Length: 370
Ligand code: BGC
Image 1 (cartoon, rainbow, N blue to C red):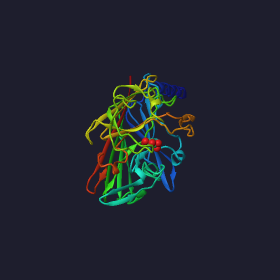
Image 2 (image 1 turned 90 degrees about the vertical axis):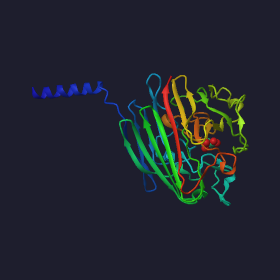
Image 3 (image 1 turned 180 degrees about the horizontal axis):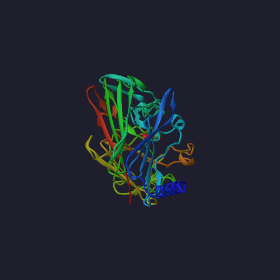
Image 4 (image 1 turned 120 degrees about the vertical axis):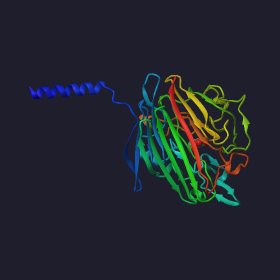
């Protein structure tokens, strides 16, 4: 009789366990993902009370995945990336990475600052791109904090970039906090300090695909709150002028499908937009709506620009989550940043960081449905 009671009790517990939704709250867990040399790499999983889930690793401070609901509550990952650390250690176009020291290009890998000439690693034709041969995306970040409260989960990472790394002056300390809130926002808070005058332009290089990776991003509808772009030469270095977007296929001040006019833009969109804020002022950058899933992404930043890139160089040679081949235009990026080649363009907002100053940036990606 006693045994039967216990079995019955256990059965009731199992059944009620299946039915009862556990108390939803923010949570954080971690696993050892692998190693880079002798350094252990961790993969964190942050969840919020709505079940939104973000995975972050200290290798390259990469955002590995972002799982959000569609309008029917179906949870899917909406960024391009890989299941294994090994794939991030190999060659890939900066999926989810923290890019630095300089997001985008510096012409011929050269600049001068306070009458000193600097030569950077060149890794994109004749130019320097995204921090050089071994940028922040390939560095192991220290784990400073990882915790969860009722309202949010936080992972704080940092990296000390030594003087002259990839050619950049100054010992530079970079810190990033990734915060997942219960408002379905990922807040990316950056800070940096240097011990010599240097230049700095860090960004996150997530490739979004709000369909959950089912098709390319050409049917996504985009509003980009920017009135001008920095046109480039054939090597994607800005010419130095600002060009109004009005009347051109670059005008997204009202919603357009990304694919609507992309044929008029050779190769696809890969261009820096000047935002409407004063540098440092936190404003909305963009809203992207994917009509089938109903998912919406809103981007906000304190940066003066955003690089809108439509995955033009993806060519199907990389296989990511769920065995998906990432073909051309399979993801789009909204990289909050200063303008490309600013160290050589005095007319652009300054990217100089001096000893005693603190670099700060806040960028937020917020998810919802319509
Ligand atoms: C650049 C592209 C580049 C891509 C991947 C983007 O930020 O604007 O030109 O191909 O990153 O590296």
